Length: 138
Image 1 (cartoon, rainbow, N blue to C red):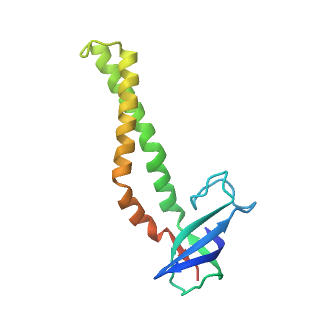
Image 2: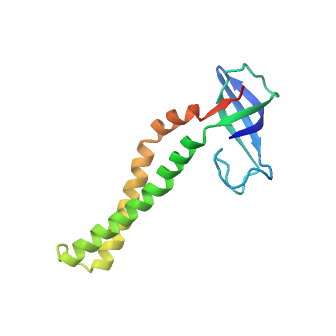
Image 3: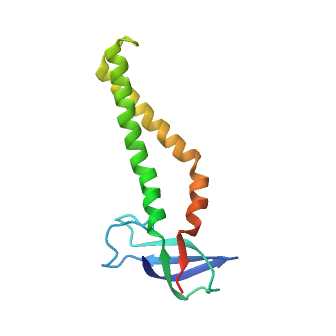
């Protein structure tokens, strides 16, 4: 996907490009823009030696963005389901002396919190991998 934006600053080999939501933008949120935002600034590798004020076309590697979205949204949801199933199974087995429904809820919430802690701990690695998501198009 290619989007047009304005360079609002540079720092070393990085350019900061501001995108403004257009009608063609849709709701994919690939650039990190939420539905409420009208613009977003992203870091782009300055491979074309652009300067502040330049208009550039930026290529967005959608696959990386989609994988990141899956990690951020699907992993915690999966952990919620796994936690609920484990808690329910332990409750039915009578191992912890509580009702299965209550244990399912507690374990579901607990596993979801663990998922968010894992994501938070791995955030620096994800940021490093996403640096190459945006590049100035040829």
